[in-house]
Image (cartoon, helix red, strand yellow):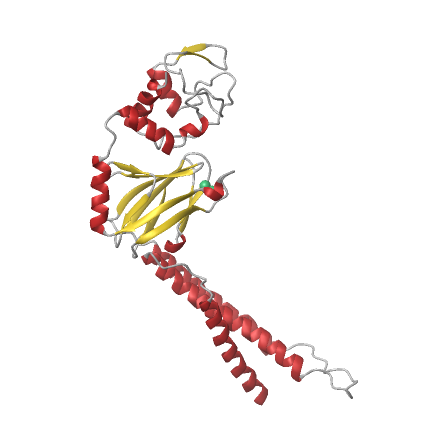
Length: 333
Ligand code: CUA
């Protein structure tokens, strides 16, 4: 009995020390969203459990090594044990209860971070190789940085133009895969003003590691100011807007504007030119051809270029954006 009491006290002390050490090494980034608080509560329960289990095993092991080791004059065998039903039932029942309690806590946390506020601010997120692009449909604003007002639930409606990406701001804790051809939702309520970073957490090609973008959580007044700045700074001409879109949506990663060879055909001298197609026919690169090629690139494949290479922009670019890109391409003479 005395040994059990000693082990029990040592396990308690060790649990406390291990937990204190784990909390001191900065495991968690700042809590910058309402969701992060719920997620961290669950993490903290797990950290106590981890500290306890580690201590229970290590203390018992060390204690046994020291106290029960073979003495000099001991030569006989130890007691022969064939089984202990009480012990087996106990070590099955306790983990079972623990797992059920954690499953309940996990489901409750999942519910808490998915609460939907009908007044949430909509932001459309487009992920592509390798960029982040945001649109605020309520304000007619697009941006390559994510600006969010504090204390407002944000409804991130996310889609990908090519492969699977994943939206992750560690300070917000929540993370969501983005599937091409589908719109997925993520709710986040920023609670702390500051500058953060969105990372892509799904391996998506050569520059996956650099698929980062700035996230600014600002006061609601500053957000309104930023929106009106963006609105008044809207480019005056469709040509200029097309040029910006070509960069922000990554068009120019594959289509050069100076005639140099890239993955896709160059845009230089494209408008009005005769284009040879892979089926042997030729078309004139007029308005209709270029607009169709942006939205449905596999309809007419240019000779010498592989099919099914260009991302699907049909869910991402609206009519005016396509017109702007066309206007820009027209200037590349
Ligand atoms: Cu996008 Cu990794």
